[in-house]
Amino acid sequence: MERVTPVYILSGFLGSGKTTLLQRLLSYWKDNGLRPAVIMNELGDINLDGLLVTEEVPMAEMLDGCICCTVRGDLGLQMSELVTQEQPDLVIIEATGAANPMEIFDAVTEVSLYLKLEIKPMITVVDSAYLAELYESQKGKTYRLMLDQIRCGSVLILNKVDRISEEKREEIRELLIKLNPYAEIVDAVKCDVDLGVLLRDKLKQHSNGGVSSVKEEYNLEDDHEKCDENCKHEHGEGNEHHEHDKDHHNHPHTHVSHNHVTVYSHYFNGPVDSVEFERFIAELPREVYRGKGVLSFSDTASRFLFQYAYREADYLKIAPQGDVPDVAVFIGEHFDQTLLAQRLSDLENKQSKA
Ligand SMILES: Nc1nc2c(ncn2[C@@H]2O[C@H](COP(=O)(O)OP(=O)(O)OP(=O)(O)O)[C@@H](O)[C@H]2O)c(=O)[nH]1
Image (cartoon, rainbow, N blue to C red; front, side, top):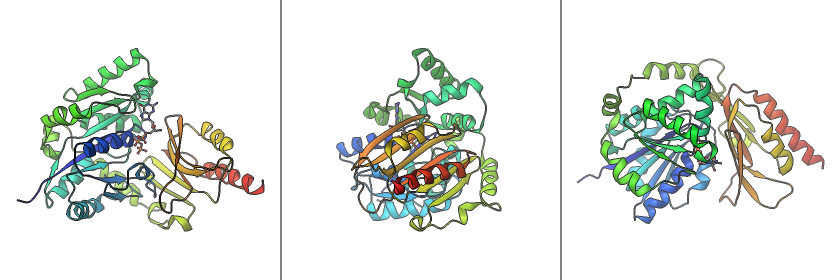
């Protein structure tokens, strides 16, 4: 009998903790004798999150665009290569934090028309601190996207509760219940949740979902028009996304646009001073809400994976395999990319003169 491959989808805003959860899920499945495969989608042209996934996990990359619109057409090919060549026990898709969740469901459902897939209900990771802030003003595209991601999740991981008060946590929990009364809500720090319970009980009840049943269950409107609008915008005149050189080693600065979302990648010519870089990160404009990269610092021998999410920075020592350039990717809404480029070039120049 032809095997059916379960597909899990991880949704959640940029920097909410999807990769953190992915790492936990992969170890859990491995400990339980299963062989998962991963599809990673990144808005930028480099897969930095993939550096955190061990080499034995088969992985397909969908870079330089969003699974819900610009690179949507690649999903079928990536999925079919993974499923036929690797024959994994399951596939997990980490969408970009900017992805419209209904469009991801639609894209996976299209693929399931010709590949035997069991589409598992969506897991949405919620950045409780960021949501708490946006809830105050209750406006903006980021806020609306977060709400859509919450409405589509069957399990909502209320992550980063270490960053909010007990009182706020209750407020946000109530908001989640109001937005999505069907979902299981699990509070977490660093997505540390009981995965046995999550996968065995909480996700089981909605399995065999797929886009139509999820839509019926949650009474969701079809968002196609909205996405088409995004796509038109992306393919419109003057969009650098289709013009830039795919070979990042020859092209130091790239930028794409996911409607309101701006991505800027900076490839470094050499090491920079760690203190100066930390200062640069601390002074990032508020419109930049996500940053990640691999860096060599002139004042330390190691290389670092740096993370910046909702004004919190984190540096992890790494020794990446293969040819990984020094790069920093910044994601935000309408921020001034030339200013960032200038400041980073200044850091590089200062270093080369030192
Ligand atoms: N304070 C705090 N930080 C967290 C928590 N969970 C994750 N982080 C940090 O948040 C940053 C982003 O986490 P990721 O797991 O990479 O987030 P993501 O959703 O995969 O990010 P994108 O792929 O860019 O959308 C990292 O520096 C994590 O260490 C948490 O519960 N509390």
